[in-house]
Length: 59
Image 1: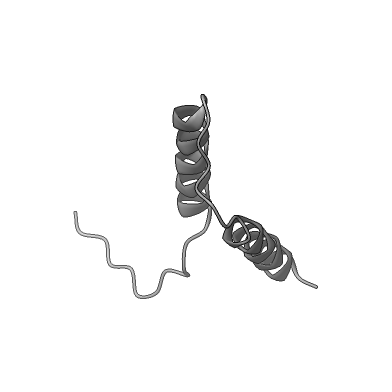
Image 2: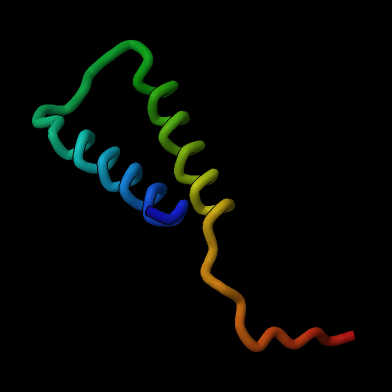
């Protein structure tokens, strides 16, 4: 299994775990948890990008 496939599998499993939460989570540290989820999204977005094709640089 390639690294890309492993990452995709891990992210898919994480999504499945979150989907299994049936009721809203009400807790004292909800803001902290939301911030962590936002950081996770940002890290994924920054680390994973499609291949770049036909890049033209203008000077």
